[in-house]
Image (tube, rainbow, N blue to C red; front, side, top):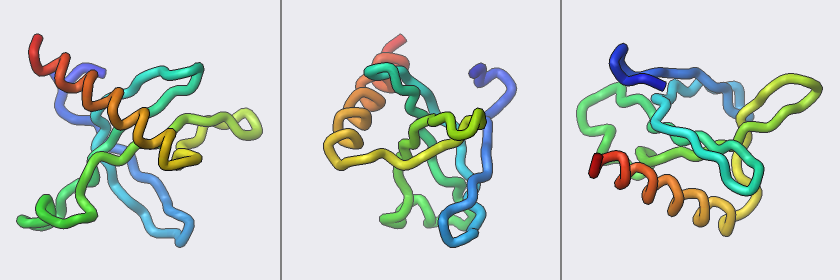
Length: 95
């Protein structure tokens, strides 16, 4: 996605029915799976200091022919994909 037009945002609904707005950061393919990284939007000054603010990683799955975003299955999967995103983001910063 091109940043020349500004950031991209999506709204997802959690299991409790709450809408959450996320800012798209990047995507990557790993072991045949597509993962996407997001940051939560900041509503008020100081929210970035909250422990709830941080990189959110979701994976793209297809269910009944529809593409959905899902949480990762394990802490090991999350750790592995998080490391890949950090590496990818640092490589982009160096360019």
